[in-house]
Each structure stands twice: as structure tokens, then as C-alpha cells.
Picture 1 (cartoon, rainbow, N blue to C red):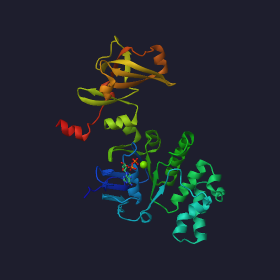
Picture 2: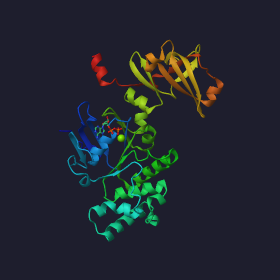
Picture 3: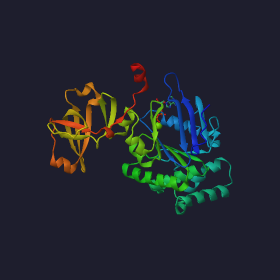
Picture 4: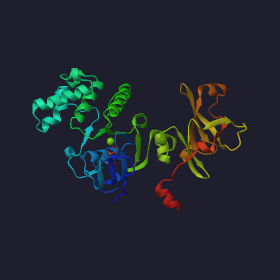
Amino acid sequence: MHATTSAQAPAAIEIVALTKRYASGKPAVDAINLRIASGSYCCLLGPSGCGKSTTLRMIAGHESASSGDILLENRNITDLPAAARGTAMMFQSFALFPHLSALDNVAFSLKMKGVPKAERQAKARDLLERVALGHLAERKPAELSGGQQQRVALARALITQPRVLLLDEPLSALDPFLRIQMRAELRRWQKELGLTFIHVTHSQEEAMALADTMVVMNHGVIEQVGSPHEVYNRPASEFVARFMGGHNVIDTPEGKVGVRTDHLQVALFNAELPWGTQRMQAVVTDVEYQGTYVLIGLQKQGVALSANATAAYSVMVPEAAFAAQPYQVGQSVQLHWTPDQAHPLSVPAPAMAAAA
Ligand code: ADP
Ligand code: MG
């Protein structure tokens, strides 16, 4: 039923009208369409419960689809068993068997398939060499660092020669320092192996750091697909602007617009502003020192905060600029921005229908 896509770059995964209904009520995944380019790092991003893991599990074959199709390199895998799909999964905190050596952890799925010992161990050793762990093959997981465990988990997933590696919050159990190290390593391995990675995360920072393509989900639907730069600089909806952070959502007569916190400007109440700038009166509610910049919280003059979520704003002022003009809580100021810094945000579908 879907349109031909032969003109585009080859897709590792193509998802067509994919839906998952667990019980009555709204579907957990609601007729999503998505193409993931071969050899790319794709992050599925969104708040808890938005349907990321369900989408990933349907691709893996750990969850059945209620309707729709999943194609892997143009092969329809929707109803294939997990082991026959050409995908492999890497889990949160790696889920290694603690009583097995690194080598036996990597060889495990071949053992399950009945591959003879010498052959599976040779393959496992080969993969451990590829992730630079050949010399630690006999160690148990507890005798390896977090980074080394991640590489064992990667080798274990790769032994089935998957075309696509699926990762569900693989870094979320790690402490913040290790998480940043490990994500750099994941990114490096993905590029070196030239494989397609699909990585689920609720962290916009993690997705921005890793992804070639970000897929922002909310309530079982895809809100936006794009590079981190595109999504951050052109959030398609109010939801994306707020979820990504670093943006103000401003009500204008032309509709809601997004303006980055580092593009919105504060000026004294009586300052003369350049011609053509958009402006509004506001009151400073917060001043937070952040090191290289100061974050100023404001609210629209004359609007109670609880009444309107789009009446609260933040502005990042470089440290030196703030030192030259220190604003104070309670001070009346002007907020201003240029039209090219304001991006229209689409209205969610139900509100649009109501307005029509
Ligand atoms: P995410 O990974 O984005 O946090 P999930 O895909 O796990 O979200 O869940 C999406 C929705 O489906 C949630 O409302 C969740 O409660 C529901 N859900 C997930 N798994 C099951 C299940 N096995 N049975 C019933 N409902 C489920
Ligand atoms: Mg999840």
C-alpha cells in the first residue's frame, strides 16, 4: 500500500502504519511510518510511556504487531520469529550472565543453536578481538569494567551477524560519568561496524549526542523526524520545543512560535529597540548563575503564571553581558526577538479540528 521509495537512500528498516494495541483504549503505538537509513544511528526519543520500547520490541520480534508492516532491507519481517529477522538486541545494563566468562557469554546464542564448541568459541574469540577484548576472554563480567562489559554485550549481540542492532536504554543504569564515556564508545563502534543502530532513550541530551536521525515520539505517534540540528533548531511542535528544552514557546497573533533561550533578548523597560523586532513586556522572576551564562526566568507582564504555560520564559545571558547589566527579580523589562529567530509551531491535531 505504501508509496515506492526507490529514489531514496536504501532503508535498513521501513515501518508502515505500524500499530500496537495492548488492550482497550488508545494504541501504545498508533499507525507510525518511518524509514531508517542503512548504516545510520537512529534514536527513538520521548517521555516515558510514549511507545518507544513497544516500537523497538515489535522490530525485534519480542512483541507482535496489531497491524502494519516492518521491512528489513525490503524483506517483510513483521511475522517472523525474532531469531530469523536479522536483528539483535542489547539490553539495559547489558544483562550478561555473571557465571559465564566473556567468551562463553559471547558464544551463548551459538550454543543455543547447537553450533559445535570449537566453532562457536573461535567465532566468539574473533568478535572479542574486534572489540579489543581478546586478552580478557576468560574473565567473568564482575572482573571487567563497565566499558569492557559493554563491549562484551556488543560482541554477544553481533555474533548472530545482525543487520540492525536494537538498544533499549542501554546506558540508563550507568552513573553519569560512565554514561558519557559509553555513549561515545557506542557511537564509535556503530561507525566502525557500519551497522544500523536503533537506540531508545528518554534523554534528549543522549539522543542529540548520538543520533544521525532523531525520532521524537509522544503518545504513540511520531512528532518529528530529523537530524539533531534540525530538530533542535526547527522544533515542529510545541511538544518538541518543550521536550527538547532550550526553547521558549511564545503566543503571538500569528500563532505559537518557538524562540531559543539564547536568541531571546532582555532589555531595560525604557530601552529603544531596533526597528522590526518583536517585543513584549515581562517581569524577572528568577536569576540563576550557571557559570558561562546567567539564566533569567521571566513572566509576561500582567499574566498569572498558572493561567498560561506560554507566559513563562527563560533567557540565557552570557556572563559578561549580565555583569554589565545585572537584572534583578521583580524588575520590569522588555523581551525582544527578530522574526527570523521565531519558528512557527504546529498546533496539535485535535485543537486544529476544534478551531476549524
Ligand atoms: P516507553 O518505552 O516509551 O516508555 P512503552 O512502549 O514501554 O513506552 O509503553 C507504551 C504504552 O504501552 C504505555 O502506556 C505502557 O503502559 C503500555 N504497555 C507497555 N507494555 C505493555 C504490556 N506488556 N501490556 C500492556 N500495556 C503495556
Ligand atoms: Mg521503554
